[in-house]
Amino acid sequence: MTAVVIIMGIALLLLGVLVLGLLRSHADILKQLHDLGAGDRANRTRPPLRTRPGVPTPRTGVTPAHDIIGSTPSGGTLKIGIEGSTGLTLLAFLSTGCLSCRGFWEAFAREDLALPGGQTRLVIVTKSLEQESTSQLNKLAPAHHPTIASSEAWDAYDVPVSPYFILIDGSSGMTLGEGAAATWPQVDNLLTQAMADLGVAPSTDSQGSGTAARSGAAREAKVDEELAAAGITPGHPSLYPEDSADEEESE
Amino acid sequence: MALISGGGIEVDLPSGWDAEIYQRPADQGASSVLGLQEQTNAVLHAANFALPSLRGDFGSGAVELMTDADLLIVLFEHNPEDAAAPLFETQGIPLPLSPDDFAPGQMQRTLSGLAGSQRFFNAAGRAWCLYVVVAELELAALVSIANDVLASLDLQEI
Figure 1 (spheres, each protein chain N blue to C red):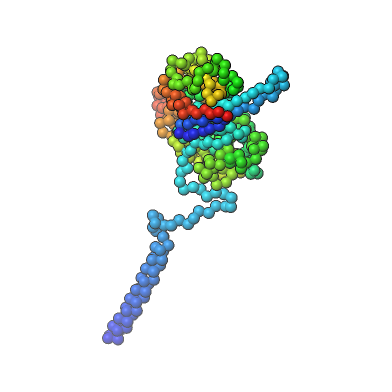
Figure 2: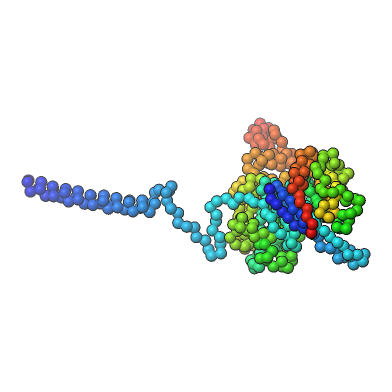
């Protein structure tokens, strides 16, 4: 009996040592995971975002709107008002020397070019005249959209590459979307998505008020206006499908 | 405010304003037909709305887009030899403009809801026409803004 008790005691001791070892090992693992930031979202250090070569890294902050002062292709002085202006402005940062800009110059020369937002104003921004080919710029600059040569604007908007696009809502001074793309349809798609994500409805309204149609009260008013134009006013039967169903059943 | 300059014209403009100072190339077609050499001079357009790219020297193409809160300032230089003509006898920029100076009939082309004012003067030995168009609905307020901007105008000899 005494021998059995001694054996059981030794076994219990060994088990205790084993459990302590396991607990210590587990604590070491937890400590190492904590040092790596696991389970602590607030203090976790994010690894730097990587992009493909030639693709600029997305900005972490919002680019504030600035007016642009520069030269016209023919050497005049031009100021484009953006701060506090009504409506949307699409800044297209292009260069006369970049091959990937060629498609955009050609697209912008089209009179029937449709811009996201309907009443959006397109402004082409090149670097200052001394950094561009002025003969090329005079050939490429479209007649129906302003072209301004201003290296200061490239610095102010921190433009990483060309071609590069920034869509600005002047009334809020907010950048709605920005980025680089290879073709105009890609840019159009990206900007339309950005506007939809932010609740800025692309408008094809030829009467455009000049301000971005936003979600909320403005959006509600626009919906009301469109319903009224279709003859659907408050109390219209089509707004009460259940009542209509009841009426049909009673008939 | 932002200072822009060119062609001997310097003006301080509020944020959000569009402006252009340019000198249009001479019309070669007209010159060859009439046997005359057209002389072009400096022109300033400044507006509190987005100016279209295609405009006439006196703002055609832009005035048609103006709404009830808009203001357009045109400063057009005539040939310097005209500076001594009676039309330009007023010395210096004729300021301040008064709301009473504005009338739809002063417009180059009458447009509903807009009123204009034209003044001829000489400054820096150059002959100028100042043409301002405002929305009638906000006439007094817009004329006041125009006076503030025009007070910053500096015309220089070239």
